[in-house]
Length: 446
Ligand SMILES: Cc1cc2nc3c(=O)[nH]c(=O)nc-3n(C[C@H](O)[C@H](O)[C@H](O)COP(=O)(O)OP(=O)(O)OC[C@H]3O[C@@H](n4cnc5c(N)ncnc54)[C@H](O)[C@@H]3O)c2cc1C
Image (cartoon, rainbow, N blue to C red; front, side, top):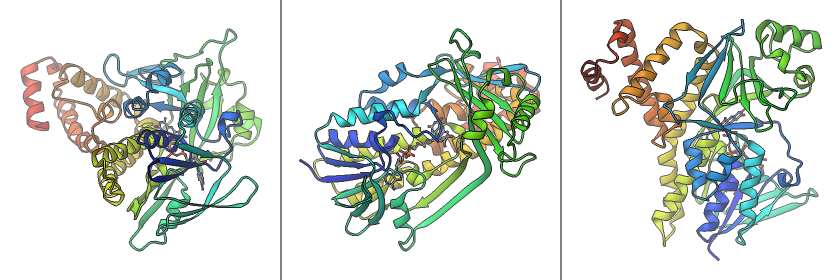
């Protein structure tokens, strides 16, 4: 068997990465803090369903799971905005046929673990919490199922232990390790829109639903069971703050005022609101991600706020890029060189998606409700549909492409200038004048 690689964290990125590495012949040891979620005792707590898009699908394709995962997902072609009066407005995400997919976090993670378990060169350890990491010797210490001390030493350590990574904690003590952790003044609650009496969806299931209310918002993603998982994002110190709604009367009155169309479809609202924990929104930036033969991937390297639906997609893409670099270096594997290249390639993209996600929060909770914004989106959609070779929206570059996130961030600014020019000069009437628009796009986008 090849070199021994230890993975810390068997969430989404860790379980996928273990399969990539096993396919390359390494001796893979994957340690996960939680119990085995295949036993059906999955601890929820963090988003029940997730939006999967092209980057994530491409990463799953490499292990042959893309089609199977899409089969258990629900395609969403656009977003449906709900105003306070119950009117709706629809905006497609991209061109005809372009979708993002709502998938269950636990089903996806379980499927990845099932596949990992089929490889004889992967050993899975559950109920093992990493508590210490020695970045010089690659020695890791875990608390095992009975609280016993378990020590593991390997050739390479890859940390996929999420936003509060224990391995990253050890890196904090290294000279010149830069680190920031920024919380939004927002919390989130997971709630539910139930199916109707016939088990059918009560809202269009091929949309991501948004109730934008300027300083707060609710979103809903469909599940195959006919229900929607809703997430309410609200400031901690708003008026009221997310944790200040406590009694049944307070919660119901608040929903009646702000989400009246959704309220009748949420019979478990009060119970869910009172019992579900309030989640927090954090952006983590750090660098370097690699020290000797130890590296961070996924949320451990770059936790982002969830408003672009890209955290998992980006984490899967980290694994894909690392696997590509391993492939290119074969048959010699110079790990310190590979990990250097990996971090140099991914860090600008992680920064870009962190910025994009923060920017999209303002768009989702505030702008999507305004007529000016809807008009701007219509113009943008017309450009990307009629001039696909010259104009690609930032959303398409981020979600329906595997080109660098950094490129999407850069082009977003340029696209904004094009849209400003068209709208401020009243050139909407010229959108079908191909000569005029092609010339404008050439001049402004190159
Ligand atoms: C509300 C919300 C909605 C989201 N929606 C989307 C979305 O729609 N689309 C999208 O792409 N992304 C979304 N994300 C982001 C996505 O959840 C993360 O980016 C993704 O889970 C990162 O994968 P990971 O494997 O790096 O981390 P995780 O999935 O968090 O996995 C980390 C694993 O490490 C384990 N672990 C932690 N500490 C230790 C330790 N000390 N020892 C051993 N094991 C440990 C954990 O138990 C866990 O299993 C959302 C996030 C949130 C919070």
